[in-house]
Length: 93
Image (tube, helix red, strand yellow):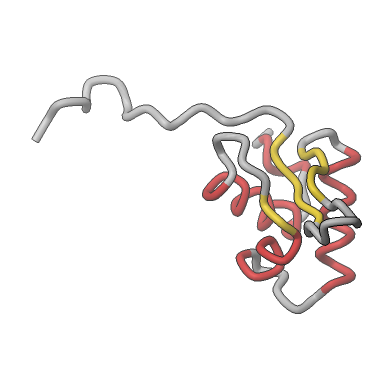
């Protein structure tokens, strides 16, 4: 079974954003997730996908200081290592 089969299409879209922009553990604001994911403009689906990924312990909340007006953000619970080229292809031209 493919590991991604257990995720909805909405969750996969958000995970792709985290893979591309937050791989190293950087936080991504909800506004950025809304703009970069396939869910742009659909607040209920975006909120549901975020809640589901939080429930599955894949992302954790960060930011959102009401006193300074910092927007809510999320980051991957565990940063993803950089991709390595397939064995035997490094250094080939």
